[in-house]
Length: 225
Image 1 (tube, rainbow, N blue to C red):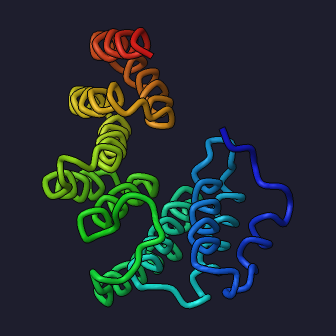
Image 2 (image 1 turned 45 degrees about the vertical axis):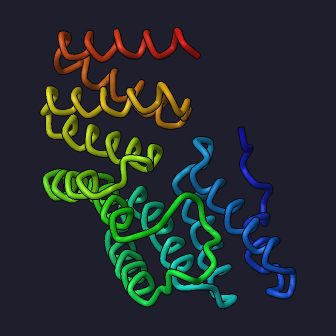
C-alpha cells in the first residue's frame, strides 16, 4: 500500500515540466490521484493532492483528463465539507467533459464520462451530508453505468449504502452494501471492503438483524481471500 508522500512530494510532481513527456505526465496524474485516495491520507493532505492534480492539469491536457481531475478534486473537498469549492470543481468537470473529443488521449484510471460524473456528484453530496440528493444521483448513475465497470459500480453502491445508513434507512443500506460486496468478491478491491466493514458496524448499531446479514456476507467474502 502507498505511504503518504513526503513533504513537498505533491508539489514536486505538480511542478514537473511539461517537456518531461506524455508517459511521465500520465504517471504523475496517476500517482497524485493514488495518494489522494490512499486511506492513510487525511482530509487536509487529500486536498493538497487534489490541488497538485489540478496544477498538473494546467500544463495543458485533454479536456476529459482535466474534467476527471476536477471531479477527483471535488471529492477531496467534499470530504472536508467545503461545499462551495466542491460544486465549483464539479461544474468545471462538467464543462471539460462537454468539450472533450472521444479521439483524444486519456491519462486517467478506468473511464470518465457523464455516467461517472453523476456518480461523483452523488458521492460528493453524500460526503456533504445531503443524503436524499445523493441517493437520487447515485441511483441514476447506477442505472447508466456499464455493467463491465465493476470498480466504478462498486464505489457507487458503497456511496449509496452510506447515504442510506446516514439516514437510518438500514434495509436499503444493507441491500446496496450487499451489491457492493458481490462485486468485491471478484475484484478484491481492499478500499471498498474496508468501507463496507465500517458501514457494517454502523448498521449493526442501528439494527442487529440487518447487521448480522451483512456480517455473514463479509465473513463469506473474507474466507475466499
